[in-house]
Image (cartoon, rainbow over all chains, first blue to last red; front, side, top):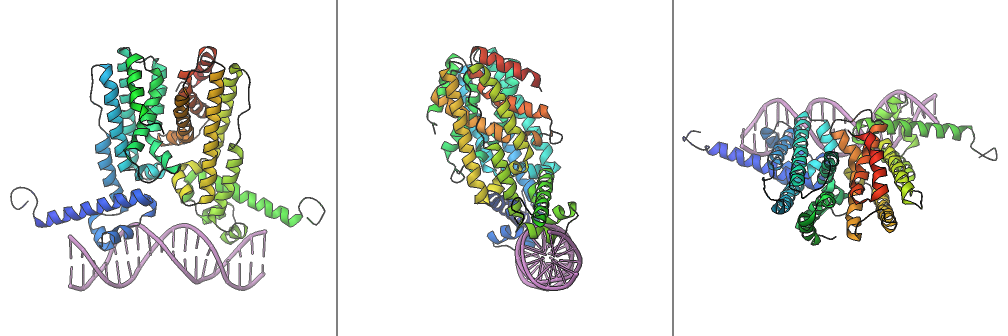
Length: 222
Length: 222
DNA sequence: GTCTATATAGGGATAGAC
DNA sequence: GTCTATCCCTATATAGAC
């Protein structure tokens, strides 16, 4: 910080290199799976030496951790609070879409969740905290809709529903990849995912809310 | 077949060794994840040399393929056809439980589905065929219940529902493991999984069928 | 059928020059 | 900050003796 504010020349260059490494790593991890991407591959793709890569990151796990923190910052947001049940559906739809976009962008995490979380506490604990919060969010939203008379479900039903929402939201894109829709996920695929999740809630909805949701979903009949 | 029927002494011994290798591999794969189990570990656990293991199996993938074929044979069964909607629920419950038990027994496949299927056609294609058949099964069951008046859902709703049933049934045990219930899965955990899946269908059920299902689920409130 | 010994390959990570 | 060279370890798989 020699010039009073911002970064000096070297720090800027370092920062740019770090960014390039993170960007290319994300791309390669998503394409081939984290386990199949070597530090050599990352360096080669950037026309950089392996030694240089290790100057910027202690090891490969540290790259994964950096990417995970970016994922966490993007995904760990609550939906906007809304008053009326009518716009609630629309808002939920957009929120869900945003979540699925983020999962898609960092899909390498979900391809190997089990191993990734098992071998690294710095991923497992934060990830589980995020899931805990999402669960609370879903339950609160459902209870809100229930109080507004837009949703009919017991507390027990809402609890079980919330778990299923988490499972489908977590694994939908992964499942689609297994089924052969791996490449070129478009807005439509994300929309279909959002539709599948909303369809879990749909049968509990009443009146306007339900009709509104059916309308949103109609464009995503696969 | 020197003695006219059955196997001679050597063939029996070979068969026993093959079984020991498969059994121990399954145990270790489930415990540590297939990627983290080396052929050396398997041999050591059996107090056998690596060379001997490779006498019985060309490579590690062949062990995985053998185990997969056993999994496929166990899981790729249709549920029994039933006439009345009342016993249909009970039968579905048992069938679902059976499926989840099998998934649990071969859970190493599900810990790394993506990689496993991506690198081996002999796994990917059969696995997807199984999922296709399961999908058909779920749809046929729902349509049957609908015709009997026990379920109210449009064809479109049933289609979307079937996809969600597949996702939850496929990933539930995996999800529970992520969440920290990795060890000591008991009948209750499997029951809870079955309950989660049935809860997807539950809101579409009418009258007796729904009450019957609620009764089954009550013992699995987590 | 089972063993010991080893070839082979790949990938994570470091040392030290520039 | 970046490079070249290399160490070290691990894992798959094979060769050949018994």
